[in-house]
Length: 382
Picture 1: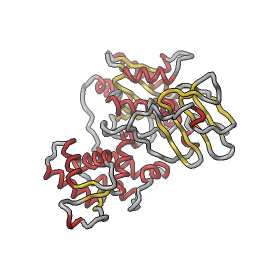
Picture 2: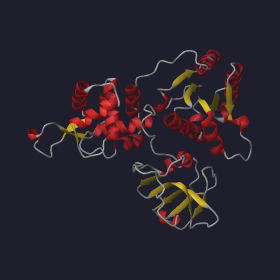
Picture 3: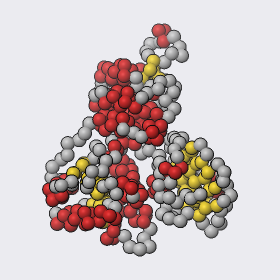
Picture 4: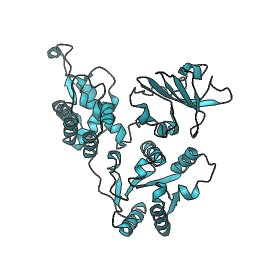
């Protein structure tokens, strides 16, 4: 029987209970953490185990839920699992007039405002396989994500764009205007771009290998992407003497690539790097996040620490600015991190290269954001 993870804020427990009762009556297997998490359980480990078994992740979304770090942690873990393993499928239950986050708007969306009983039946029918939701076009989801991004998100999406400055509305509109085959091709090209420039034939191969498009169709798409600004003609040589055009990646292609990874719409793309402490703790891969004045590191395997010889570190967060300080987490679910007044570099946390066990070819993106925003669990004090 399919397991259904029901995520909710404590304040919404009555509504969440009604959801689980309705699902159980429909012969389904809901899992409500308030009922089944016992004192002393390793929270993140337990949640990760249930998510690995669940076929659906149902989030009871409300204004209150959006302020709860644990609800957001569960949601990020579920979205990452859906990207990497295709399950659990994320379903959104809108309980009040809260704003649905952009990255969830393409998901199955049920409106519980003023029609609770009808929506409960809709939910039970959906997870039982009765009826299908009409998907929102991917380009619409991405365009809305970009157009409605706050200053922090837009800075991450557009950082390092280089040759051309794009306004949010301009980038959103040019992505919204893409045809579906053009969008899929642009995402593939952006994810596989590896050199300063690529030849026509290289781009044609990228498109043809990942779609049913033939050479002629791929070349049409390339021209369309160039006209829209996703590709720019290379100008480092006299290409009138070359057999084919050479292209550089346009800055809007970089914006699209980052938005596509964040959206979860493209299973072939790796998920974005963790942006909050809660997601870094639950992340399963080695990662290094740099920003001016501080850094965060999640090791592929636990490493020895100079802070306390009795334990090994999974996550370390350090601040360069005075007073210099390091926080280390012995395990992924450590709610009370060991902190130190003395500053430690990454090499102080391990006798060897802390990234020696990182998977070969794993792409590190250097991103910057505010430490106060990063600390969504309020564990990094002082």
